[in-house]
Length: 425
Image 1 (cartoon, rainbow, N blue to C red):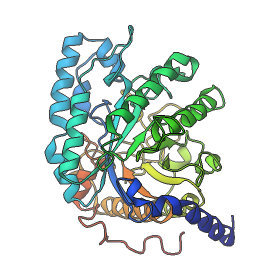
Image 2: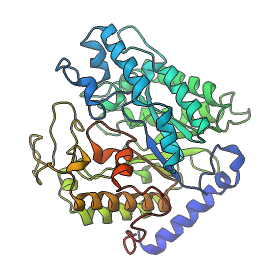
Image 3: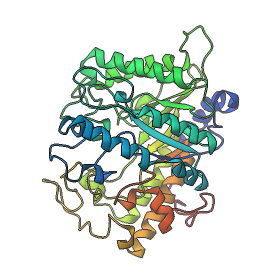
Image 4: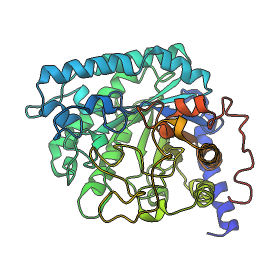
């Protein structure tokens, strides 16, 4: 698309968003006028070895996700470990720190099992009281919550972050799974439709697998349509709409794929969630620091062409897959060639782990890459939610550590690299 085409697309998108922007009273945040600046509470109410190694250390080697964490050890042992984790990993102090960092949104991934268990489900429950505490803390510190369903029955993607790592996702293959997910969306709406000043957005399904090799995409598309009416019109299409916004993930199809789907002005209150990482292929890992930054800046024009409300709901300040556990427990990295079949770029030493081991040059890149992305995502979309607020021993992914070590500015309006994307849009 040429520059003129981008201008026309941006103008059309702006006009399409006017009903959403001007009707501020409908939503719990002035979307489209102020940028979304947020962090995810990754690894809290859905556990991963990547975010919280200590939970997985010294456990059965078959334990790779939350399902197997509860399957391959006594349920009472799993429950005790999880209760301790939920009560200590994220506390009110984190919400105060998030507010003091100038952020305005907190994304909370959660799994279906916090609400609903069927016979055969291996999980243990107890997450819900902590979700409700988080909502109270957010209200106290004037933060907005995005509640996001990361794990659906059967797994919508087979990823570890869905709670159950599977070779092939099973959510789409069984209508009961879809029906259970729909019921959960309806329950979330009932819980929070009167608290949209704190919980303005419900993410109905995170990262459904968009591969043509299975039936997930058409099932997810229909689920999104149904969820739109469940979120916006829970009492029926002829009743008044809620103030809740429905967030749907792009299913890895890219934002352009969804042009014309649930689009304003016929449909209102829809956020399109896309996740941007430059590390999950050999080609990405081979890019230089400057190339990573240039690509990040160019994402602004890609986002700006969407007639929906695009938000970059996952991204990070690093550009390698070196982080321990990122690709799975006991799995290596593409960057250093420790994943079989990958092309080695270099050593991961000094690129991951404790920030005290990072060189000044690397910390500078983290800062430049962070600011390039935040500038691009605010210019082209509604804003951003970084993964993640805190991490165990993977400091390059941690917003909290970025503040401590200086590659993330204390004042987001006064960055160190305000012209980082100049000439790169």
